[in-house]
Image 1: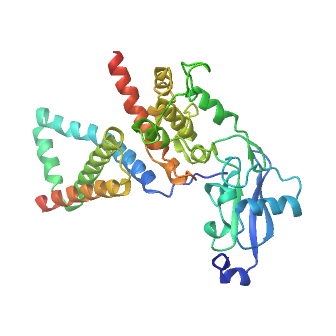
Image 2 (image 1 turned 135 degrees about the vertical axis):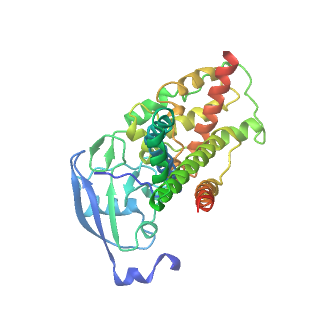
Image 3 (image 1 turned 90 degrees about the vertical axis):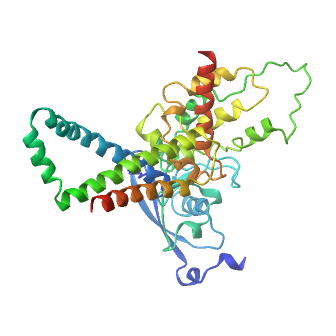
Length: 247
Length: 113
């Protein structure tokens, strides 16, 4: 489309790109990459891997913002790279691309996501129902208050952008992080959930919702527009109410 | 190697809330020490109170009042965020907290001038 080609593209058709190489103690390596219209940051990384260095390690799958696997640090900010157009993150034709913060670096741009998903389990963000497959399907009207409450936190794509943006995750290693707590709150709002107390006990313990300082870095960077701080604030209230109602 | 991205109002509100709290924690022991002079060393207290009439000390006191009101307003903002129905007007609340701080400082300065 015409709006995607700025006058700068014709004058400066190349990008200077620093890409993180190696593990945690690695360094940035400079590449020159041709500029093109509608180019995403993931396109840039893929071009480098296909034309300059086939050993470059990075992770992606769907390329359409569904799978959450291509998140990286782009010019200092955590981003989903498949949906981040180059023109939105640089004006001087320079990109610095690194792995996500707060996660162990495996190699180059690929991080070990195991701690991130382990913390989902620690926050009890999984469903436990009381019905069997022989019971009729639960009917939850889309416009019901319960369904609307669950919808507010349910669209997470597990990209770990919020986890990388969170200062508390960096400062307090046992903090489960915004995504895990956001998932826990979605579970709390599921009317079919049989053991809500299990979730509230988990999130109210050390490293849970009360560790959040409400800076809202997670909400600033969430690519799908969720606000985990809102979910965490609701968990704080629910956990407190649960404590007072049970003595 | 990977520096955090902190260019948003929520981070600055958090940082200033913490720093103002630390500054008040450092101030409080000195405050109680001076109050203690009233019990045992009245001449020293009078001398200290005379010293507080100096303009630089008044300005420092104004800064202290600003920090106190900033910490108070920032704390109320956090309580509202966590215990009241959710609002998306965070920047407005942060701006209001800074406004309260400046207003408190100016009020103190006008009363002492």
